[in-house]
Length: 350
Image (cartoon, rainbow, N blue to C red):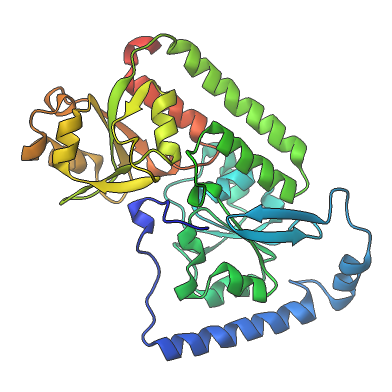
């Protein structure tokens, strides 16, 4: 089952229809047109090409059936026209060298990593945020890979069932639906599953090995360190939206030599009161940077909050900062752990 395991930026996204009837009619027409297009062109290929694709021998490892967030999908072949929505989904594909199989992308939080920039520049940006259903269908995708559950907003016509009716497969980053705590093993699973879908499992093993080399280096530097009490401030003025114990944020803190003071919140993100923050007396406050509001402004707000005046992190002005793109399940996890560890335990990296 998909759950609301996403940062506050993605909790209320997308346009609202002027009227339900008008929206439904427009989406029905779009889906019908897409289905007709898929039937006649085979997602961009000629009828003859589509016929060969359906009747020719399947590549090794296919058909492949994948269960993902409650949806079971059978792939006859590796996807060729993928649309990636959300930064971490896009970067997983680029890290696996799959840019030639990516038709379009949308909704970045900041710039892609420098090592992927050249590949990213060759991909069409279908929308600055989430595309309309019509714009998404116009790219003729055979797979839509979403980073957050909001990528598949049913009210906006991008629901996974609706896309399936148009002949489009979907895959959702498993941090959005996992019931257990997210760990580095979950990151490995996501990378391996995506690589398997595209028929490149060997690339996943190389990438996983590289990521764990960074994590092992950090672990060596932090050996024997006393975990610092860390509070994540994502956003919020009346209440604090923070990282709970079920998301990758909790794992980032643990691997960086910290202890999440709200690890007992049974989801990836949740709202808590500032009085609760004060009671748990964090020694470090990790700020998630969305790029839309200066970090200095968030720090100023926290430093001036009357409920937090006696909190050790506030009294000592101990802050750490992570960009939102680094605080989600994706290929940035090792670098995020390294960055956070440097900020929490600078003495271990001199």
